[in-house]
Amino acid sequence: MRDIAELVDVPDPSWPVLSNSFAASLVSCAVLPSDPERCRKTLHQLQVTARSPLGAIALNTGGILVHEGWVKVYGGSGGGPAGLPGMAEVNCFPESVEDGWQPAAGLIIAHDVLGGEFVLNGMAPGEYGRPGAPGGVIYFSPATLTWHDLEMGHSGWLRWLLEGGAASHYSDLMWPTWRTDLAGLGLRDGISVYPFLWSAEAQREIAATIRKPVPLELILSMHGDFCVQFGLPKPGWLGTRSADDGAVVPSRADQGHPASARLATFHDERRKVTVGIFRQESRGACRSHIDLPATVAGDMVVVGGGGVSWNPGDPAAPNGTLLTTSGPNADLDAWLVSSKDHHYHEPHMTVAYATGLAIEGMTREELRDAIYVGTAQAYGNRPEATAAVPEGFVLIGGGARVDVVAGDGNLLTASFPSGDRSWTARAKDHLHESNATLTVFALGLRENLPVGHVEVAIASQDSPVVPHPVATAVLSESYAVVGGGADVHWHGAGSLLWRLEPSASAGRLGFTAGAKDHERPDPSSLTAYVLGIRITDLTSKPLAGWRGRLRGVDRRIRRSQSGSSA
Image 1 (tube, rainbow, N blue to C red):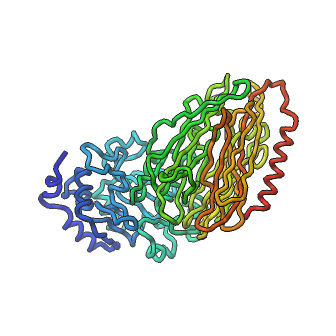
Image 2 (cartoon, rainbow, N blue to C red):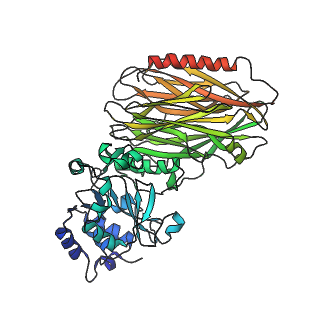
C-alpha cells in the first residue's frame, strides 16, 4: 500500500488545471469546501495519486455541484449531517484505512437529483451484473431501472459534464421550474417524482408529475425495491446517507447479512405442516433500517413474518421508531422489515422475523408454485389498499410496504386479514403532510394440494384503549401458525405500529402486535390477528363453521374500519 505522501507529493497535480476548467465552464460548477485531513484519508484508501482527476477531486474538494446542483459529484470529505456526503460515506469506506480494500462492484462518484447514479466500474463489472469495461463510467437510470455504459472513463466523464453533457442527457426529464426547485434543495435531498420516472405517464409529460424534495436515500431505496418487484436485475448498492452520531450504515438486503437464526419449529396436529421461525437483528443502531431481511431455511418458502424496532437503552419499551415495511421479498425466501424514526433523531435497532413453511411430500419448488402473491397499491397521505387471492386459494398471510414519495413519509397503522381471501393495509403521515405509495401483499396457498386439503383458521385479540396498545392472538395447537397482522383503531393524531412479532408461549405459537402514539397523545386500541393452517385428507371437508368464523372476522373488520380515522 502506497504511503499518503506518495499520492499527494506528485509532479503536475491535476487540481490547478481542473479548478481552472470549473471556473471557465459555461455550466455552473460550485466547488464545496473540504476538510483536508478527511480528504487525505479518502485519497489514501483510494490509492490513486493527485495527478489523476479522481485523486485531485478527492484531495481538494468536499464535492462539486454541477449544472446548478442537478449532478452532485462526491469529493474527499463530506459536509456533516446536513451537507453533501463524501466519497467515503457514500461508498462505505472502512473506518480506518485498510490495505487492499476497494469497493468491489465500483466506486460511486456522483448522483443526480432524481436518484440516477454514476459509478466508476471495478475490476470485474460483469460479476456484479454491470455493463462496460473495468474503470469505465456507467449510469443507473431511474427512468429505466437499469445500468447503462457511458463508454467513457473518469476524465472523459468530467469533460462531458463541463461541456454541457448533462443538459442533453436530462433534456426529457427537466421540467419548467427545475432551477427554482433545486435552488432550495438540501445537499442530501433529491426530487421525488410521481408517477414514477419509469412510468409511461412521467415519460409522456414530466411537467404534469408531482415533484417533492425528499432524502436522496429514500429515492435510492425505492429504485432497488422496484427492480425486485419487476423482476429486474438487482442494481446493487446505490449509496446511503450519513452514519452520524453513532449510527451505522442503514441496513439493506443487498449489503448481505448472515443467515438468520432459527428460533423454533412447529407442526400441525398431523405433522404434515412444518413451520420454522427465523430471526435477524440489525447490525447496529441507526435512524432507519431499510429492507432488513430475515431469511428462511433453503427447503422452506416464506409465508409470514414481522418486525420490531426498539431502543438499545430500553429494549422492553416502545420508542419513537416505527415500522414502514413488513412483507415478503420477490423470491419468497426472506421477510423484509423497514423502520424509521420520525421528526426526532433516534438511532435504534430493528429485528426482522420470518415464518418459513414446508409441507410433507412437497419440494420447495412444488410448494412455491402452489403459492399465489396478490398485490394492490394506493397513493396519498393516508393510503389504504386491499390485495386478494383468487378462487381455489386460501389466504395464509400478507404484508405491506411504504415507499416515500414526498416529505417525511408514511408509517404503517394496519396490515391484517380482512376476509377469507383478502389482506388490507393502511398507512398515514404524522403531523406533517406527506404522500407515499403503499403496496399490499396477499399470500394464498392452493386449497387442494397433492398431499391433502388445506384448512385455515384465523383468530384475533383486542387490546384495551391505552397510549401503547399491545395484544397477542393465539390459535388451537392443531394448527401451525403461518402469519399474523394488526389493525390499529386510532381517532386523534394517530397510533402507529412498532411491533409485529411471532410469539411463542407454553409451546403455542401466536402473534403479538404493538402500536404507540408519537409526539401527541392518542390512546388507542388494536386488534392482533394470527393465521394457521393444517392439512387434512382430500376427502375431508372443512370444519363446520370455519367460513362462518371468517365472516365474523369480516363483520368485525368493517365495524373497526368505521371507527378508525382514514
